[in-house]
Figure (tube, rainbow, N blue to C red):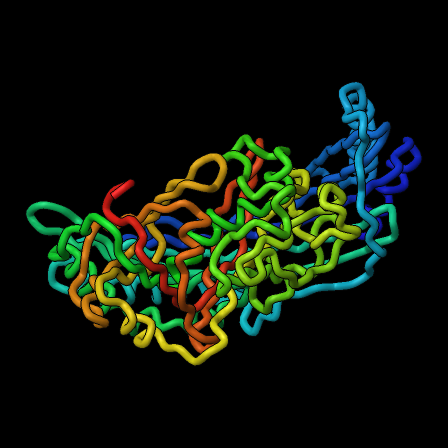
Amino acid sequence: MKELCLRALDVARGKGAVYADARIVRFRNQRIHTEDLRVASISDSESLGVGVRVIAGGAWGFAASSDLKKEQVAQVAAQAVEIARAGALARNPAGIRWAHEDPHTGVFRTPVKKDPFQVPLEEKIGLLLAAGKAVLAVPGVMKCLAFMHFKTEQRWLANSEGSQIESWTCTSNAEYEATAVDAHTAKTRSFEAYPLNAGYEHIENTPLLAEATRVGEQAVEKLKGKPCPVGKRDLVLHPSHLALTMHESIGHATELDRVLGMEESLAGSSFATIDLLGTLRYGSPLMNIVCDNTMPFGLATRGYDDDGVSGQRWHIIRDGILVDYQTGREVCPAIGAPRSHGSCRADSWGSIPIVRQSNIGLSPGTKPLTPAELIAGVDDGIYIEGMGSFSIDQKRQNFQFGGDCFWEIKNGKRGGMLKDVTYQAITTEFWGSMDAVCDERFWVPYGVMNCGKGDPMQIAQMTHGSAPARFRQINVGGANQ
């Protein structure tokens, strides 16, 4: 594979490319779905191919193929140069600015104790069916959907600057959803071995069976929950819920290609423009948002990005102020940054790398604070767990979020369950209302597996971690209340 990558580089340079990189990637995906007490579907697929990206004539060119014969790889490299020269007819007069990166030679591997693809299929199915049986044993539960998903990505990357990188990442997750039904409606409750870059040991270490009865009972309880109140309420948000809120209102808003208007085809651009860098009050002084592509088990942790840049850790929001972005080598010069933060990834050997979200986390509070103490500071509010519906405008400013499960908070105590809760806010006002975050003991990394971006759309994964946090006087139950 290394020899094929180097062959592609030689051909591209011989055709006049001033920069070239070649990626050969092998993917394997296994998905197991169960419905109630039966197997609904099993899929196990592999994909292998090469993608070559070049700069020639002041423009980008990219070509790819699933045929790894030497002559075909050479043809792909030549085609990439040809495409670049054709694109040069409409190139940006300013040309391509490409930030420096020292060459890297290395191997990265996800730490895995048990390769999920070596675990017998019967064992995985048995666990899902056992969870389904326990969920369905709860009176009132009528349906249980469950799945496991395992993915590996083996990548060989070489570029004309001298980098030669190999990586192997492994992702594992599992989830089940209980549906309770009465004469009027149906409600669901889910539980997840949230996705991590880890082996099957992650599934074994998650109490999927132990939590099944609780999950079923809470699905039934949701049927009897009080309707969502309307008006301003304090919110206490669990990390499983905050993951999506961070993803949409911070993660996408701080991708520099989106900020620069280079990416608007899927979900718009961003209000966090570069003229506001260093001055925009994004949230309260307690708000510290850190990108960390070195985080153990993080879904975006892969050693090096597809620009050949090593993984890094950096703040994008410090003490509530926007201080940086997620960048690739092509876009970072726009903010005067001498080096990319290594956030450029492709979802396939057949896709061109684009800026993608890093592992993004809300730093925990610096003073000891438990979730119970967080709730004790609320007179009238709502506690929310899990991801639900979401909607956000094309500038990442005005949003509405739902969740998976909700409880009323009265006089500092968590009370009965609510149903159909949504809240609305402006991004900076929402994060500006955050007045407390639990300490590091309660920080949990939750993963997003299906982040879409680009045209044609690419799917990426990343981790968003936090501890429970409290937000004051947020509109719930309807906009502009």
